[in-house]
Length: 35
Image (tube, rainbow, N blue to C red; front, side, top):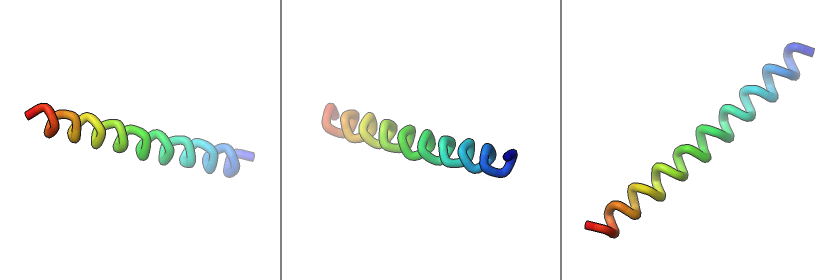
């Protein structure tokens, strides 16, 4: 039970990490476009 829960947590963290990276990249590109 704990193993599957840990798996779900790690999957969620990986998703959040990827989402955060995408947002940062988008903001960075917007910044470059503004310059």
